[in-house]
Image (cartoon, rainbow, N blue to C red; front, side, top):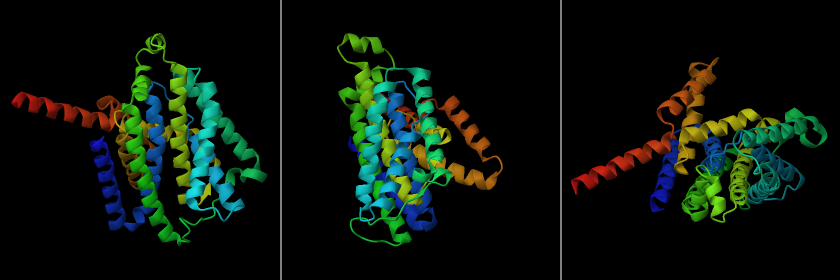
Length: 318
């Protein structure tokens, strides 16, 4: 676990170094880390052999919760807004998860997609409450009682997102290495055997589902504060697809992979839009094909292979 913590701290150092050297990168870095939090939620499900094409709805739920509360209760601190937004997604995940964990594989993924599109449609139709396709503005809150200007707010938010990322990487990796996490991974190979051992696969998947919803909710809360605006597109299936893309790019072998994949994806998308503005999706899609073909375990899988090779060489020398 020390290696995980050191890796997360090293990642934070790289992000802070980039932000200090290139101040205009603050917002893209915040967005990339928010994507990493959401992609980590997908990684938790991938460990169980399941995939969701609709998890952006939890980021959307938390984002709209933050937007509504920031305008309705202007005295609320940013930390309280993040906590309440994440809590709203966790509660939604508990309720929806109790239903969707009954299904597996493509039915699981498509059911999540269908529910997310229902939410997307409702947000666009109820203009009086949601602002329709225009969305809702997020009133800039105080952070720990400090009323910050835009530049200071972005800097503080970047530090906050980094702290959340380090804690989440450490916590999720501990979960994945725990007995519950190992049992969740066992669902991927033989769910029936788990049931014979007296472990409820449905309950196990529900716990992982709620965790993934909470991670996406935390991502949506931070995303809403950084953008200052939430729209129904936060819950659109394309956003869910981006989360899945990042999760595959980073790999499910380690919690750190989701954030490495998110940073790579954000900069790939940013520079592809500049180089081939009319067809940047083509470059991103080609990258995904290459990753799936040559690195089916993602970037974290590549690191595991190098570590295993180094371990074998050391054992051979001894």
